[in-house]
Amino acid sequence: MSGLTDPFENQYFKVGEVPKLESVYGIALYDPADGKIVYMHTIMNMEGASPIDYQEKEREVFEFAETELKHDVTKLSVLHEANLKDISANYYVNVNEKKLVKIPESEINKFEDFQKGTNK
Image 1: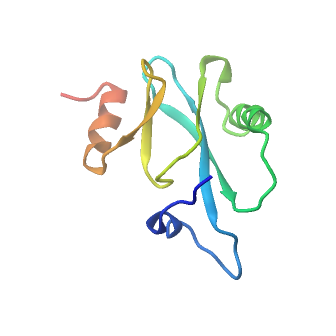
Image 2: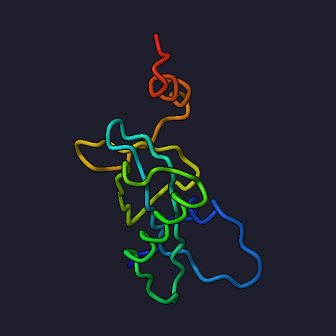
């Protein structure tokens, strides 16, 4: 597995001797009707770390969304993104292609209005 680029390495804080970040794994819970992500869970995979059971993490994400965020998870779909590049970005799911799409900063308000049905 190859490491990420330096700009990505600068997207999080490090204190002391920290292993190199290899990848960020994202688990998105989204509305299959419009692709709106209701919860995005990210997992930072560090060099030399123990493997993660992503199916178990998915179960935990659904449980968290249901119990803590009070979402009706029976109406949500899940998408796994093995190599999330920008952890601070806003995304939606292209439901036809089943992939994450980054929303450009200039479009975030327009996209939110569209999802609320208030765009003109």
